[in-house]
Image (tube, rainbow, N blue to C red; front, side, top):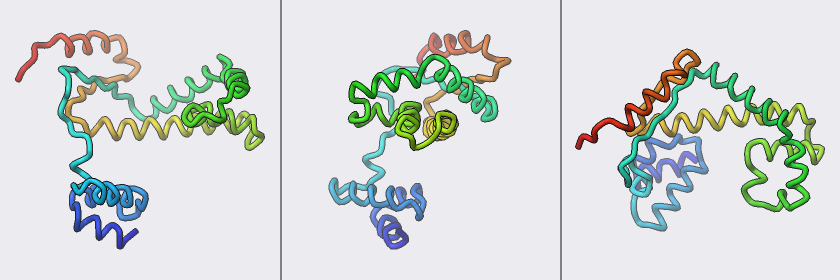
Length: 174
């Protein structure tokens, strides 16, 4: 990937700066986009310009608290019958689907039903994969300057609706 990263640096220095030299898949994708479009890879990335007049609100929760909330949510999913739900959906072709079978929880339960792991391992993997997904979401939205971040700490939860409403109702400034 080193030679490809050097090639990307020549074609689109900004993209090369944003993509690690060890991330071969992203490097190849960027080079493909440049080859197909004739434009820098970064020119095709979404910007931070709003199409609609919206207010974007993010809820900031400390990682340990978020991890605990995720674990409790997965426990509730299992208690509410996720395994039976997946078992039923499997009889209706869930495994043949291109996206639903890869959804968090479904994918792990399908692995347990196939005997690839135990149900406890599937549950633990669902927690781990959901935490990883939450970290990726956080990284993505943190880069967007349009997002107004509010505290989602347990102590601040009662104030969240009022703070969010104040952001939504504030006068628009150009």
